[in-house]
Amino acid sequence: MAAVAREPREKGVREKFRRILMPGGSAGSPFLNDKVPLLLARVRDLCVPLTVRHQSGDGETERVRLAYHRLELDAQVEAFFGDMATAYSQSGYRPSLCCSGSSPT
Image (cartoon, rainbow, N blue to C red):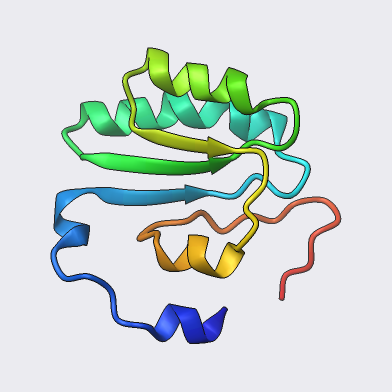
């Protein structure tokens, strides 16, 4: 993942949209699935253009996708990120989360 993070990014992308990565863990996070679309809609309403890639976990993808759609947010919702290094490298912003069972490393 470190090698991918050092690769050069396309110039100008960060100025157009804030690219948000929302990793909900391999099982997803009910809290993040419920709260993040509303939170990011409020951020967007402050004139911050953004696009989201959200990991919802199995069984939640369609519900979370619909929440973003209803809020008119540009979001790619997936149950699981197969290539986390690429997901991180394509995002400009990602939360730092501590979850039960996760390792801080």
